[in-house]
Length: 225
Length: 111
View 1: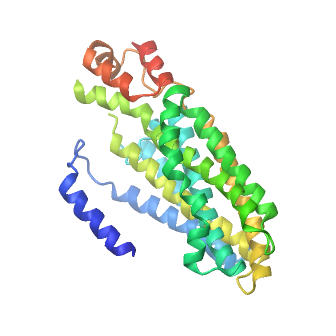
View 2 (view 1 turned 90 degrees about the vertical axis):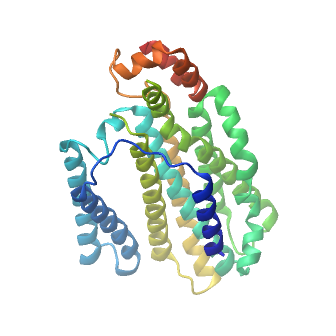
View 3 (view 1 turned 120 degrees about the vertical axis):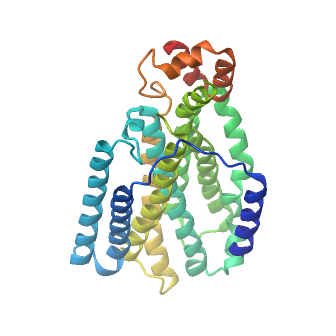
C-alpha cells in the first residue's frame, strides 16, 4: 500500500515542484559521519535496552558512543566555516523552543500511535482493519482541526495554540493511560483519545511553521534584496 | 548567511529523531512491565508506556512556551538584511503577510 502512494507522490513532485537552490556549499563529510554515528548510537542503545537490559554493556556502550559523537558534532559545527547545522540558529529562543517542541511532539505522537495500534490488536483483539476504523476519531481530527488551528493562530499567535495543543494531548493520553482496560467500553474511551487527537492536530499545524517562521522573513528579505 | 534549507533540515531531523526516540523509550517501558503474549500482559505494558507519551507531550508544551517570545533571530539591529526589509515596501508587505503578529512587531522594532 505504501509503495504505490510513494510512487504517485514521486511522479507528482517531478512534474509539479520547482527546484530551489541555495548557495553552493561543500558537503561536510566529517559532520555527516559524526551526526549519523551519534544518532545511530543513541537510537540503537534505546531500542536494544528493552531486550538486553539498561545495564548491559551493549546498551551502555551504544548510548555513550552516541552521546559523545553528537557532542563532537556540535563542537565541530561551532568551528567550521560553513556548518551543516549553523549553531547561531539556536540563539533564537523561538527557533530553539519550536524545534524542541517539534521533537517531543513527534516522540509523543509516533509512540502513542504505535502503542495504541498494538493495544487494540493484541490487547482488545481487533483485526488491523477494525483497529484502523476504531481509531479514526483520534487520527482523522487532523483534517478538521489543523486548518482551523492555522487560521486561529493568525489571530492569537502561535504560542498559545501550540502550548494548548500539547497540553490537550498530554491530558488525553494521560487520561487514557489510566482508564484503558480490556473491559472498557469503546464509546466513552474514544472521547479521551479524540481529545488527544484534537490537541496533537493543533500542535502539528503550528509547531512546524513556528520552527521556520522566524527565519522566513529574513530569507525573503534577502532574496528580494 | 542564513539558509532556510538548513533550518528546515534541522526541523525535519529533530522530528525524525523525536519519533525514533519516542518509540524507543515507549517500547522499553512496555517491555519492562508487559509482553505481547496475552491481552492482560499487553494492557499492563501499554498503560505506563502511554503515560510516558503523555509526559513527552507535556515536556513539548513547556518548550513550546518559548515560541515567538523573543526576536525572530539573533541578528543585530542595523544588520544589512534587516535594513533591506525596512527600506523596501515590497519586502515589508511580504514580511507582514507571512509572519505572525508578534514577529512583525519585532521587524518594526528592528527597523
